[in-house]
Image (cartoon, helix red, strand yellow):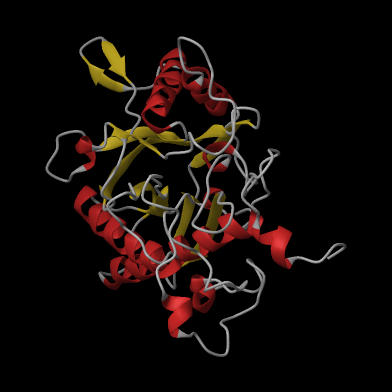
Length: 336
């Protein structure tokens, strides 16, 4: 019997999620682990990306499947995290077979969180390989935390603390699709100086406050609000479905997922963002009709936008002096 929907990426059968969080460091790692190799693609639309093994996700490249995705803080230092996940996968015999050798395929995207006030004096080697392994070991089916955890630990936006968000949906043919996003945007996820989210038109229930849209959005509300030119950012994540899709179809799905990013963050895809979204299929359900792919593209937009708003709504401020305030610090009354 299918489990109750949690409105999380783990609603998609065939995967698990794990976090490693270090509040002293002000950073972390999130792993999406597939039970079996999953067909995957993805696309980078930000101007300042950082990634590992992202080129192989292009539909023209030979390798079709991945074992896991990794999202990490730490900027380029965080790229060590995929090595820790590879260690865990290698230990259990997972990987792309090259003769007698198996090489775990673990694409990774990183975000910039080095200037958020945490202690980044880690010595000779960064902690991210160990954190990647810890996140791999923490992978579990079902519920996982949102907000200031994993790759969202040190995430920020133009005006509010960022974090990990997730959302899911079910298509009319019964396919499940979900998104997991670490929101560290150069731009803003909320409208002007108020509590309303740009993604409010796509909200299900009160998953990020239930406030809807403001009665009017003024020219001032639409004015560019960004972190500042010295601070690179990046929103990174993954959209996964149980529908059996080809790599080229998943590439298209990643493009429409970016549509959701652009509906939830203003502005998005800037020269100092590294906005990267992966896509994958666990292949548990065949398509019923050609229209299924069209609907999944539509839903990829929606779940990505909702996940981004949930990430900011769920975040809590880091425990440092002058830390960026969280949404709930400004608009949730004590006791509510």
